Image 1 (cartoon, one colour):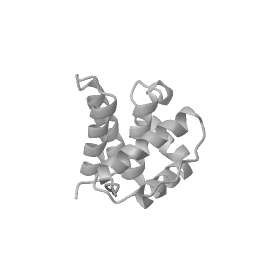
Image 2 (cartoon, one colour; image 1 turned 60 degrees about the vertical axis):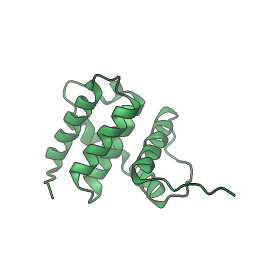
Image 3 (cartoon, helix red, strand yellow; image 1 turned 135 degrees about the vertical axis):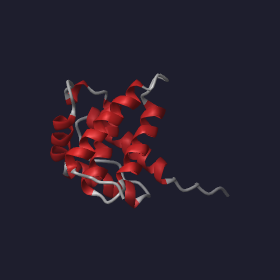
Image 4 (tube, one colour; image 1 turned 90 degrees about the vertical axis):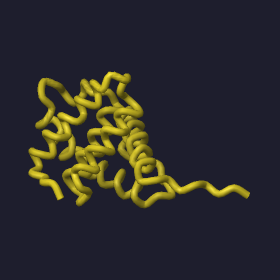
Length: 133
């Protein structure tokens, strides 16, 4: 008999990004139920606050448009923006996790997307007035 190993918080964040990608690509902001309350609660909150999240992102993109971002990058930045805006997760953790997910899924080894995502999230953090712990 084999047990399924529980997902780490990072793996749950990756699951959120994957589901946000699917929701965006299909323009259907419902999501698949999971065994993880954190994933479901986060997806529900992001879908509920999507317009506000997108407004924050647009306000902080410099010389870019939201629809120019790849679906995956948009999902990563939406999730991080949600955490920066509507949770108490320290911004250092939010940004670090987003950069690790970017590195894993969209960066081509040259750190360009990591640098871009970092700049956007730092702009958002400053815009929201988030200070260090």
